[in-house]
Image (cartoon, rainbow, N blue to C red; front, side, top):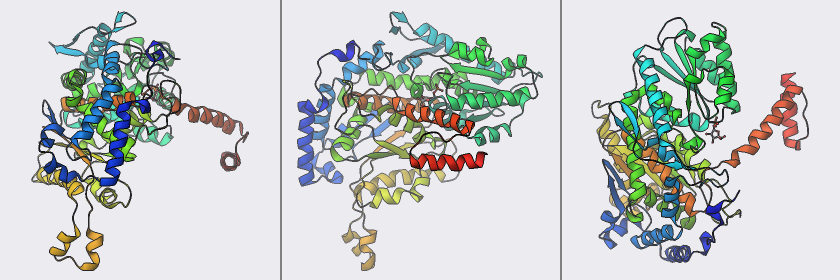
Length: 557
Ligand code: F6P
């Protein structure tokens, strides 16, 4: 459905003069090559131009295969692609999710102050002429009141006992965000309140969690924007059946709550509407962590920490909204990524947090980036003929160093830009662990960039036959992002940084980063196959699927 926003005459991305300037630069570089380490000498202002600070965050983008001239051309491309206009449209509540005709307002969820223990709107944001901020603040205050009751032990289960375990049931955006954030902020979590997350339709997931909890002291949160997602509804039903083996229907209200946009379906499930925490269609699933979907996070870290978490998001939102392109950290990150993706042909990038709490951050970002930008149709309804969303992967450092870093350093053909994320101060200062962790955090990007030449190896006495094996070509790019300490606030900043980066790239690629039609075909086919398996019929499929169906039907007989 095309709306007014895309009906204007606009140039296609590759028709922009700025795109073609970059193409020429790429051709030149293909001939001449570019050595990152040399750029510091050639460009005395490089450190100043390519490092950025925001509160206690320091982002060093200097170790990248981009000259300052290329950076300038990329900034010009962002201007020509009207990134600022689209950003402003997003903040204004315009319906920039044009295929679903929806506003895109995850920024409204954190447009709040926290004054005297209450969430209050910072400013108005209108959707269809209605200010959405009073409702945003009201839901946050409802969550806070509920959180206080559960954490203080005032909220009692059906037998009068306080809650000791939370089981969050959701998937995708209704799981990855709350799961990752709760885990990353574990140091701020409440002792005696166990946090569990169930997402997979594989019965193993819920079975293993239910083994660990007691129905008398467990609170289930059913999280689903649509309240129709098969995995979530199947797990929710299994949880309810398990609960009803010990308790009655009227006890459900004390043990089941929901975060959703679908009030009627929540009520139909048996959840008291008083215990439903709503959000709105202008919050995309993968952007929903700071909405009511954040309820498990608030239960774990408490409302004050949660307010700090939202503050962190808001700091980055304000920066993204106001900083000029050249100084705009998410935009600069997006442009460097775009240079690699579209001009250098680097198809994937790694996110490497040097922090054990953050080990789920890469998998959280996979949905954010790949569900947003893994698309081939532009806003004019045409297939594009350039690369769009990259493959994102990663793991916590230093663990990854002992598995896939070999390829990062010495692959014959693959260059994988990496984001290194670290914290100056440790939340668990044990002996010299943190010094060693941070030594690795600094050493890896340095090694990736500088490599090790055969001359140096020979000089150091390396046996001649091993010299080629031990040589590192270097010249592998990376970003380094450092915060003072991992806190709810810095995590909020960190997530918003990537949200806005992904948004910027989607705008330049002229795709809709806000829908996800690509997940639907598989879901639809699974529904058909499920019914066929239940009916004991193989149905009509290709030969490969038919053979597999027959094996499955044999087992299910
Ligand atoms: O399958 C993709 C998806 O629609 C995601 O975009 C979403 O986050 C997830 O499923 C869960 O959806 P819901 O919150 O409606 O259960």
